[in-house]
Length: 263
Length: 263
DNA sequence: CAGTGGTCTAGACCACACT
DNA sequence: GTGTGGTCTAGACCACTGC
Image 1 (cartoon, rainbow over the protein chains, first blue to last red):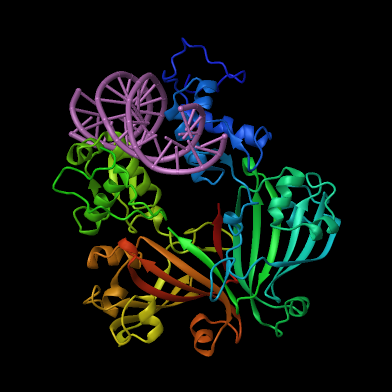
Image 2 (cartoon, each protein chain N blue to C red; image 1 turned 90 degrees about the vertical axis):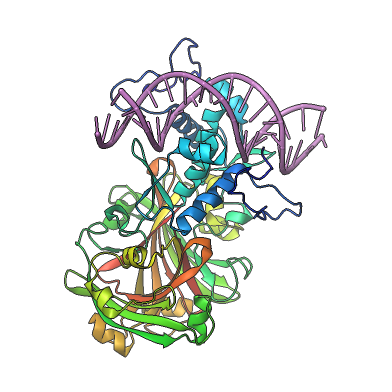
């Protein structure tokens, strides 16, 4: 039973030996549980913010012990895909909660803590549908020419414009997204993606460089010509390592800095 | 057995719990085990690269079950303080291994993978003993005027000077460190710190900004005047959150980029 | 082969949140 | 009180490493 996948009908013959080693790879039970939990999240059986069944209930459903379910949930919890709350239950992680507002935005003010400036002001400058150029398509695992949405916005903290971002999204999963919906939405953009488009960003990678402000950037961020800016290119992924967003940001680093923890 | 302290000579003081609860609180056994393992590593009972006792042996020593020891080791392993190797044992993590060479240096070449350029060339420009200025002292949790070592070096990849770093170290723990020893040493500086000074860097925090190259930087990194550089200020910590190094680096980002994973 | 870490179980009890 | 996650135990067996 170790290398086969569990029956999708969620029935495990009681006679089957769960520990017999078959040759090729060997996948522990808790890994299989992880996959099944992941699938349920991906397919929307449990949505972001909702509780998943209790450990005992999942143990019964999968015909394993509570400890095995626990190990699977521990892993997913460590990957920030689930959130455990003692006495209450286990919940699908979401970008809509205050505590995780700044999980992906690592820019913090020179003095103060992340978020101490209050919510950022978001000004959507444009949002349009275009054809993917070669590099955009590659980043989003599309074909050149495929339809993508492109948005541009400025984030301001305490009236100071601090970030300019260009954002590219595959058009298909975000059908119906307009500048108005972006502009009218309060809270993190990734929260909007969850509730409106059932797209949950699970992880991201960033490439960071220092670049001089170009003419367009100078005006929008109100900095002098050639001011060094932090160039942050991010690709965000949903489940299954599927890239769902490309973002090219320019950060002012006179009033803020990019904060990173190394472990 | 859960809320009592352990019955051996190695009893922990009723360590204050990190949670914000007002009650006297409650420290699980595995947390106490973690602290004791941490202490043994800090005091050098097991040195970086060495194996710690087996799970069964530790369980006997601490009078707990193997599962409890296991949970403690799991945690320390997740924090990169220990490394488990199935069939061999559990080892104290070290900066001297190939696999973790680039744990703290996140600069990767535009094309290629971390380390694909071969080992970096390290040129020590200076190493001297000075009095800590106010900001250096604050970063290293010293008093203004305390003795510190200050070193400057250039890292080059494939003959291209890429990083200039100024490094400050508290003089006391690094007594005897000279430019010669730095220059003659092969491999990561943090590995030298482990073997020669019994100082192990456990984690670090970085503040990243974009800044124009100043006159001194231009020559050393061979870039044009005003070229934007990545300014990376790092404070590295040993056990117990004790700051042991301040590092101010300037990275060229035309040939490389700073890579960060967000989870 | 023995010794190590890795997985899994069944059951007990504790801490926490809600009702 | 009930139900949730959190801790701990004792024991079994599996997978990997090296003698």
